[in-house]
Length: 346
Image (cartoon, rainbow, N blue to C red; front, top):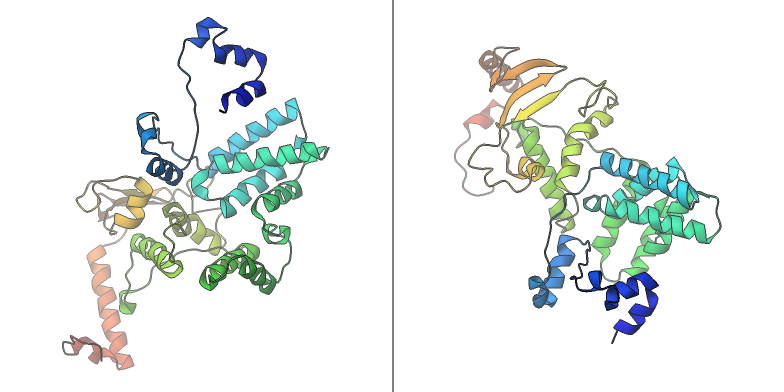
């Protein structure tokens, strides 16, 4: 039923290929290539099981931000050389930031490039000579229904108005609305989130790796959303996020030319992390902390094969325990260590 309208919409050369007039091509099978998320593919196969035998699924690894930014720059250069409008660097940066904040980091490069492509089409339709940051924001506003003042991190907007906007559109989901408002507030404030470890005296430990796991699980539990935060985001919070929080992102926090060589080597060859499906997820959720075998600080090896080289580790731990015991004695809280067994909450 759909074939005739479809054929009429194709160029003449493609119609000939499709109908077999070009016999060398018409006798060959037709291969259709598409792209979708894992969730969309699962829903498709669940609704139409017969497609499983017709579709070959090829998992694609998402690009990171640096790779996506480079690819987006190449796309912008081709647009500039071909049809216009001129795509500015600010427009590319805006497409990257907006796709990361509102379209999901797990969809790179597709989300950023699709937003950029739609913004170019809209700008060309409006006869604009250049694609600007404002043009990209306006495009996403039309696609998502979000006000431009929400999407533009440089624009001021009252959070009460944001809450009212979403409450009118999401009925009976007050917690979800508040979660969205909180997220927008953080984006507007340019909030940087970093992780740090705490001491054993407050039901914690000194493991940054376990701090990553708890940070991720807490957000998923509070928001009742398993996709509210990714393992990659948590790892960034523990590295470059922490560096930004103390104003040292130009020196530490990532492995880049010109920064200090702070590197930790992780040994994944153990029972509790096996099998490994994704390296970053395995580090955040499955590692316990003692998988770190070698550490470099500013290019100097301070631990090799699990042995600390810079200090006598046992002596430092003994000294820390002695100082902690003296501190609790002076504070009058050392009786806490001698309390009786408690099998119920008092």
